[in-house]
Length: 104
Length: 182
Image (cartoon, rainbow over all chains, first blue to last red; front, side, top):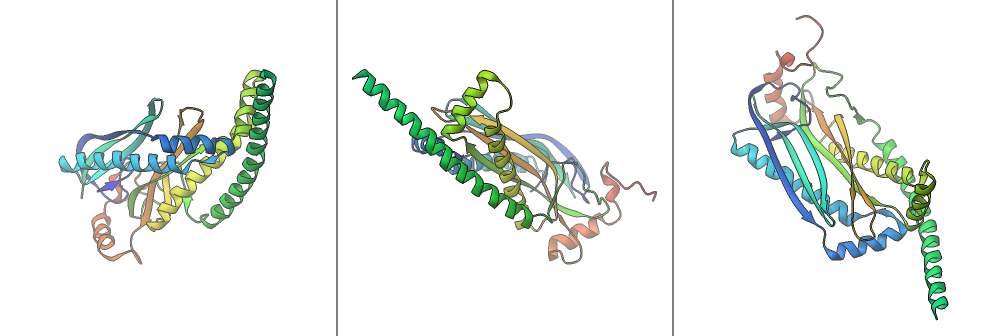
């Protein structure tokens, strides 16, 4: 599966468009991480726990999108976009979407 | 009794401010130093915000790369920002925080592109999301784009050869075809 965030794959021809595919996941951070983060908030800097959490969640959303594309018979997803929204305190939705296509 | 409590709170506040300021500054200086050295190392990998590579006639192997950083402000910065929000104006403490996070994200994205043997990243997008929480002011900065690995001489066997012959005569497939007449 080839993923890009442009409308084409350089040097390859799109044979068929299969429409929108998407994948999302909602993740809550756990209390332990929250406490660590609030301590880290005194000195500032990167919250590695959160970075990891969001990276994992984004991978999960992407793999769900990929699975949907595979089910549709695609071998590439073009124009992939990410979106994150914090829906409540302590939980965030990660969303990935793109256009499933068949390339040669 | 009450004055003692209030005094205690004041001391905690001052200590937190001081710790935040000192540790935050040291961490920031160190982070900037590390960012600068890594930026120099990864300089050869160019990043474009344009949607198409500058050399369209070459064929590439494309893959999506991302880089993500979550940063939080320190205690001093959050107090400073709260003060700024009364008077308005530039909040410098946050500017540097976001600048660091964004550059770090770009570096992470570049690292993962490098691991795939890419020579450039195109169509780079940024996204910033505030992460709310009890007593936590954090922001996530995401950078993502399409990493391009040139195919052809020296490229890895199977995929390269296959895509090369396939793309040979028709790289005009996309809207970014060569301006040169056929």
